[in-house]
Amino acid sequence: MAVVPAGRSRLKTRVTELLGIQYPIIQGGMQWVGRAELVAAVSNAGGLGVLTALTQPTPEALREEIARCRTMTNKPFGVNLTLLPSINPPPYEKYLDVILESGIKILETAGNNPKEFIAKAKAQGVKIIHKCVAVRHALSAERNGVDVVSIDGFECAGHPGEDDIGGLVLIPAAVAKLKIPVVASGGIANGRGMAAALALGAEGVNMGTRFCATQEAPIHPNIKQALVDAGERDTRLMFRKLHNTARVLKNAVSDEVVKIENRPEGAAFEDIRHLVAGGRGRTALEGGDVNGGVITAGQTVGLIHDIPTCKELIDRMVSECRADLEAAVRKMA
Ligand SMILES: Cc1cc2nc3c(=O)[nH]c(=O)nc-3n(C[C@H](O)[C@H](O)[C@H](O)COP(=O)(O)O)c2cc1C
Image 1 (cartoon, helix red, strand yellow):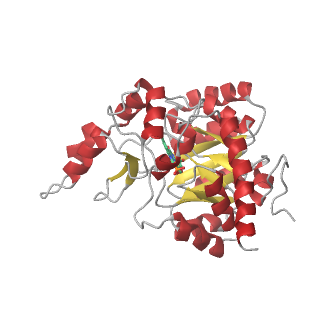
Image 2: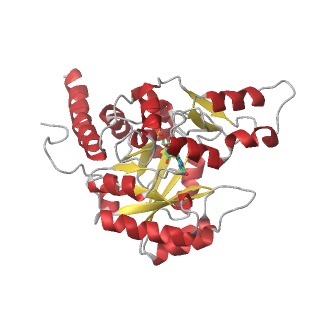
């Protein structure tokens, strides 16, 4: 008997049922990348696209972006709200109000565990995916009432936390402790990774870097090509000593940041601020200068070899995932 019936137009888990999507493949929130073009393409292909709230300069601009996305898809999509400590915090509450007023039914939270935001969104029937990097944080989010936990292994782009636990351990550790469904995030870029995540007990996958190298990602072709050209060793960890680790693409800027951070006399944030400013990263992503700023990317760069459409990518992942699960069972026969 087939492990996963071939040719089925769905791949059903608790995550697909909760979110009303065809395949348990989520495009995680991505600063400067999570715009309507990409989000609609992922949702139209049967996954879940997620707009990034803070990519929009104001809550009102987010309202317009949500409306724009609705003109491109009638499938479910979500919005990511990343709550990070910051010198000048954005008006998080106002962004949340716009998300709720716009009738968004899926919220991806990340960063601080936003207990009061969760309660407010839940009261309006919103499904919440909380993204975190540690089992203890996942348990606390579950206690606070989130519907799904997306857990990011050390391989991931962005902030993997400070515990350095890879997905192979983190995912089953989370699955063993949580009652709500777990989505595996970090290090997944193809059907084989998805098959592994499902075998580890996850009920879906979340990807960032892989979706940056798609036709619809609203970033410069040079950056997409740099992701294709990079190998699995071509990421760097910045901000280790500031206990705010970030995994980014290895380039002239991240090399310089790490060099300054590792000076024997140490370094303060002020010493690297000019290199890591968000605006500089945005300019690099949009302008195509691969060495122009910090480019967030994960170890999956070593698994990315082309720049497909989101539909090609998702269809391919689903069929590869099925074939890889079948092949694994056959090996044991
Ligand atoms: C360019 C880029 C920007 C990102 N920005 C955010 C963000 O603003 N908020 C967030 O929660 N995660 C962010 N992430 C992390 C992704 O949502 C996702 O958790 C991560 O990329 C998963 O690891 P992967 O890249 O190995 O798939 C970003 C990732 C990338 C590649």
